[in-house]
Amino acid sequence: MNTKNRIVCLIVYAAAVLPCFGADKVARFSKLPADERFVIRFISSGCFHFHASEFTFYPTSNGRLDVDELHMEWSEAKKERVVRSRKHIGSVRLEHGEVKKLDALVTFYRSGFTPEIFLNSSDSIHLVQMRGRLIVAEESVIDRSPSMTDSKPELITFGQMLHAVVLVSK
Image (cartoon, rainbow, N blue to C red; front, side, top):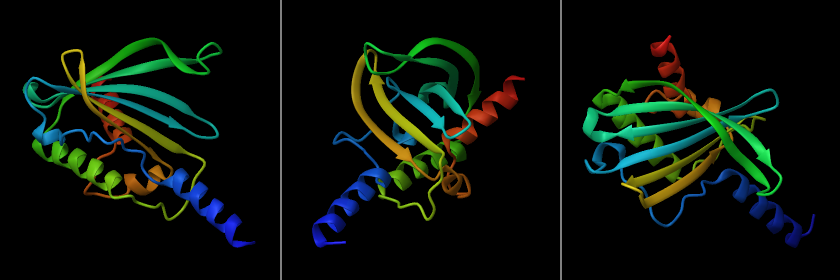
């Protein structure tokens, strides 16, 4: 393989595994102003599954986290998946330690982690910091090795939060 092909392969590899955070970084969960909220779109997909959820985090309600399950379908007109319907799954209050673990998760994603292994599964996370209807900041990341992040006790992932909300709402 010549040098030019190696550079192209390296660029493609980096684009596939590095976070895609935008210039305007969202606040930490623990430092989110009282008049703001986070809306987090979480999509987990793989060979045999596709699941989409939306979390809304409110700092003033003792860290309340509302979770909706999203039914998405392909839009030929938009050439992307769009939300066709949503179902409220439940709400939980996050303890201070859980909020700190969400802060650690965002810090971990910002660090430019490189998965040790690649799986066919991936988690897509899009965080939007909002004040009323105004978007204050937003960041996105694709975690191509979600089982690696799930195994870090200092973090709490959105997949783990979804599982916890489903258990509480039953």
